[in-house]
Image (cartoon, rainbow, N blue to C red; front, side, top):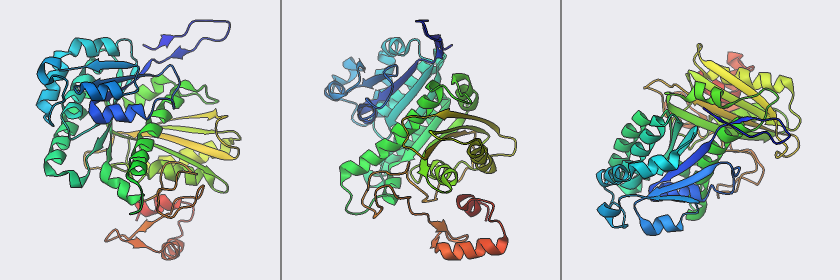
Amino acid sequence: MPHKAKKNGSSAYDLAKIKVIGVGGGGSHIISRMIGHFPRSVEFIAINTDHQDLNHCQARTKVYIGRSLTGGLGTGMNPDVGRQAAEENRSDISEALKGADLVFIAAGLGGGTGTGAGPIVAEVAKQSGALTLGFVTRPFAFEGSQRDRIAQEGIVKLREKVDALVIIPNDRIFSVISKETPIIKAFEAIDDVLRNALKGIVELIMNPGIINVDFADVRTIVADAGSAIVGMGIASGQDRVVKAVGQALNSPLLDVNPEGARGILLGVSGRDLKMNEVNEAAHIVAKTADPSARIIFGAYYDRKLRAKHLKITLIATGFSETAQPNSLFGTYFGEGRKDLGHGAKEGSAAPETALSEKEGAAVPKAKEKKKDKESDIWDIPTFLRRRKK
């Protein structure tokens, strides 16, 4: 159950205790780049078999596992060693996770510690009663088939242990960068997606809303959900609702699209938010969901947003096992993103690319509009029209 904050002259809130766990080298690096972007009440924990790598992690709490197995030198890309290391120090992991209501597990799959220890960490978190979400990356194709096979096996095992799993294939980064993009910026783009996904959930829970979303709402949508996506979009100007929802639904870095989701949690925020915009956002999102989907929405004032900007945060869960990969090169998270070398100007909207019905090849937007006009479905946003063909 969430822990109640002590009364100190102001209203008391039931605050969920949130912990973000980086497992393995990849996970430790991910959370190191997240720290400083979250409220201080969110605790970051690194778990690793590589003692040197663990020492370099910025997390305040560190759990060194598998000392007798690895001597502090890592697992050599062997998930069985990673699993045994986590089992060896299971009590230490349990102690670190004690009291958590919500646990995020971040890992890069394909190696030994993240792939092998990740499911054990998730199992411990679930057994403690915490809502448990996994956020993982899949290796690049150039890393080889063996690493990809290890990652795939890790996904299967981790999905069995978490409430919901968000997967980001590293290869998707090539859809939003150019040949000139520095490698550091490319990895920063992947980190941005992970950070924004986690931060979006944290903000939904912790920010008091005009129409409030709380931890119980998140649990309702996420508990035992299987696959999930978490999207965020920020837009301004005319049609800012359509633009922001499109960004949240269509990130090219996510593994699946949210069509047919049976659980949706939607947050709409801004400094000048209108009731009609909340209604419009909910209406658009509902078109992508299963007709019987459970949809929970909230709205809150966000003083951190720039004036005239609107932000959409979306959690979608409950896809069928045959959910199609997200092949829409729609937009990257948020307006005003960093230029990753693909020609977009600072603050401009990402290029919108339509896909042909048969081959998935890009078709000119003018041709798409002509076809849409003939079909007389102008009341449906562009990114939904593409899906309905």
